[in-house]
Image 1 (tube, rainbow, N blue to C red):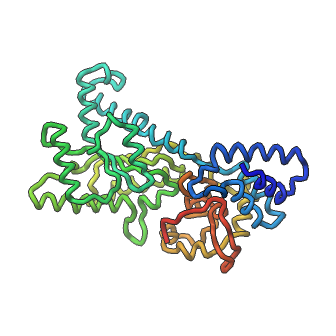
Image 2 (image 1 turned 90 degrees about the horizontal axis):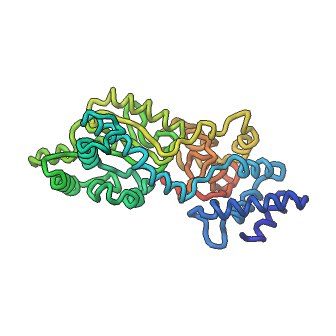
Image 3 (image 1 turned 90 degrees about the vertical axis):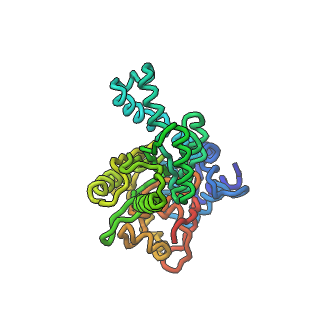
Length: 375
């Protein structure tokens, strides 16, 4: 770690006591080496220590301790290795138990008896082969999921993105028929993504209509099925398939919102392509992660003081979907102290990622630079 960066932080923080400086140096070295230096937007020669020094310096002297304490005690950083573990755990910890229960029902046995029963094993393999896995974005890391489950699921069961052309649907229909030695279709569809903080991007009801990724996927299936059936061909997914929504990481706020909204969609959508629907996640972040008044007053005060309304104006269309009038606490007011190795969610407090001029508030430099997907 850059010793100059450490000394600069000590100067900015006014650590006159050598004991305090030594203790903080030890923590900074450890966290930078094991986690923070791995952030994808840091570059050689400019990593966490240098970024932290510049970030701290922009605060008024009386606010720097609160800012540093927030990083020291409240920041949650999910590393690349930790995300990989969540992806690798998806199939054995989420898919397998569910399919085993279904296989046991078909074989008329208990789930723990499936592996010891030829009928149970055959039923499990049949259900597994009729399961399709669809990535909703680059964040779904489908390549990692596929490699982690080599030998369990086939290439033809995995779609890296949800925008699927007619030729691909025809190919899927052909491959599942060949593999299953019969005129069969996919009965289970898993929609995969890396992270959800509010559930708004996936499904929301606004201005009298449903929006989000689930609505787009549902509409795409309706159109593709119609096209193939007009050609006298079989669509590779059964009508009223079982839909499984899985995020590798989810906040409690998003989990609860998805349960409520998908239940409503399951009752209200007259044109829904799915029959049943369930919501799962690899890692469920606790509700206590969110910044709250009383416990986090110091950092909330910083969010107010150093907020720049340019953020909202730049993302007004996106923020409007969550019915917000500012972004002081991040998108959908999630107020998260969270960083993902490959990007910083806009649901995290802007104090961490804001990059603005001084036009409509404080000019801010980010600690972890965010790459916008909106705006």
